[in-house]
Image (cartoon, rainbow, N blue to C red; front, side, top):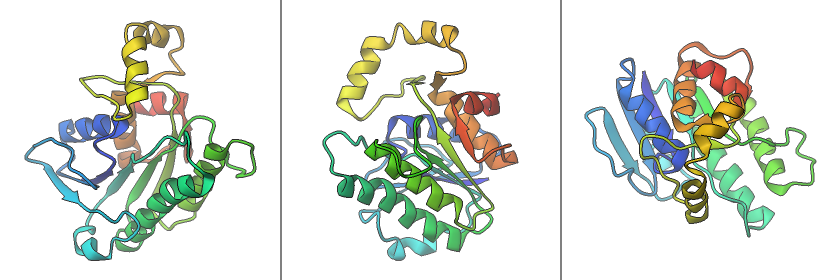
Length: 221
């Protein structure tokens, strides 16, 4: 497979990138973002692209992919709905619409979040925006589109969050997360499981298009 990853420097993206580089059936991985991932690997090529709302300048480099793992995201804390929509919805659809046109046989996987509102009508702003984004992605003419809705994710293998407040929380909870995973094995995922599940749906699809934490864990194997 040839794989494209957005948000490879974030916590989820780091885990997904690691699993892609380890997978024997992944021939090439291209990351795209405003900065590089900081990693080097024979399989890996990094595209630095500033305008995440317009890909016309690099369209020639966006063909020939079997899967896209869209892990780019931002916290809604302190943001207006308009600003959050521009990033969470706008960035995602700008990339997805371009890729659907250039790679109609692609499988597109989007990292959303537990509690996303598919009705787009709920009281939670971030959940409405994520729901709108999911619904728009599911209408695009991809071979397959899958929405991942993890809840708590345990970072493994040195993966760290770029959001300082999140990383502080993970540092504080770090010793407890393995215990919590044993107590709630269907509710807490790991960065490794998310990455493996993304690869699994790219290879074989999944029984449903919206995957909550238990579904992600089951698909990861």
